[in-house]
Length: 373
Ligand code: UDP
Image: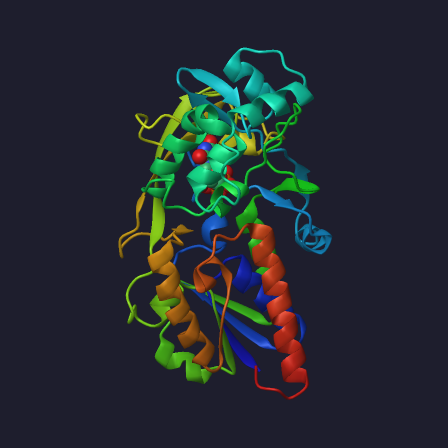
């Protein structure tokens, strides 16, 4: 069979590889001039630093099969994401942990004391937090919320945290010990030669053809036995029902002789600082040595039709529109919608790969049994 993969990001590459290994022909197209989607990495020609062109991507997972899968293509170097935040004139440790709490309140509390203290700050009248703000007030109280989450979130999402779902904040842990690892997953690391090289190895199979700067034409879908589409869900239908909202990011690059900030990611909690964070990319590859440094200031704003969509905004209006598009997608024969853009979800890389592996396994089993997927 001949199958078309729209998008050469993680979803498209993983599915293409499995299809090719099962003896099918896979054609992968992507409108951009590079593979690997938003986890694309490249060397900055001026500094030699491996940069994450679309913002920081740190691989972390509890899914051992996914962890083994990626390592089948590239060695992952040990990497722990340790994020700092600048707020109200001081630098603090993130995610909120015992160090953050003691620094912020100028105290020397032990874990159980800090837990009891934070519980006093928290608004315990909120039983089931629905919004981002309620979640923050319930779990850390107003002081830490104002310092670390309110301003950052207004900048990142362009709306009040009272309009955002609690789930966004639930991504972050709150710890009563000195563990400052941003993620709680068992496995974490960085691909030694970058994500783009890793995706290139996934795509390196005689059954796979890749065409860049090639746009998908829905009218041509019928030429293939099946299409896996990882482009924007609303884009597939020509935005017929309206546009699903996204946030896009602008990166302002600058270089520095030496070490600019001493860590990979420095968040800025204050509303007055226009960017959300500064990433210093050489710290994403601590096993490399670079004299010069490449940094990106990261600015978030509403996504226009000309911009790259980054974060799906799943507010109430979007959810209704999304339901309509999902209904259309389900009626579309011969096309499977996959990945962050294809399903309009805020997906981490490990989940993207897990879903791609499951989707292609289901497809192969259906076709082997003669069922049209
Ligand atoms: N967040 C915040 N302050 C921070 C870091 C995160 O308010 O210093 C909020 C923000 O709304 C963000 C969410 O927590 O969208 C999830 O954070 P995460 O670090 O997972 O965001 P990502 O790196 O995926 O943009």
